[in-house]
Length: 73
View 1 (cartoon, rainbow, N blue to C red):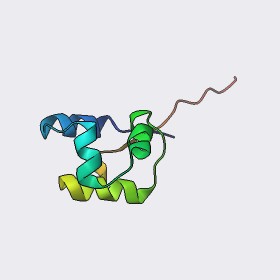
View 2 (view 1 turned 30 degrees about the vertical axis):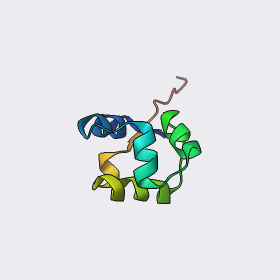
View 3 (view 1 turned 90 degrees about the horizontal axis):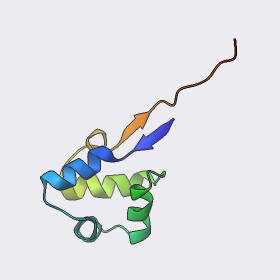
């Protein structure tokens, strides 16, 4: 299962925030922001800090995508 933060980027556009601003108001590291930018896993506390900073729920910023499986027949 893959993770996507596309919802986060859309939310940031709606709130007129750039990555640097979100990093500062959420109190997260630039390394964590870079991981988000690459759709990599981050700790739940990072997502919690972002949600608290922009007043949203985790489902508003992250989406889990089921990867297709290939079966040999």
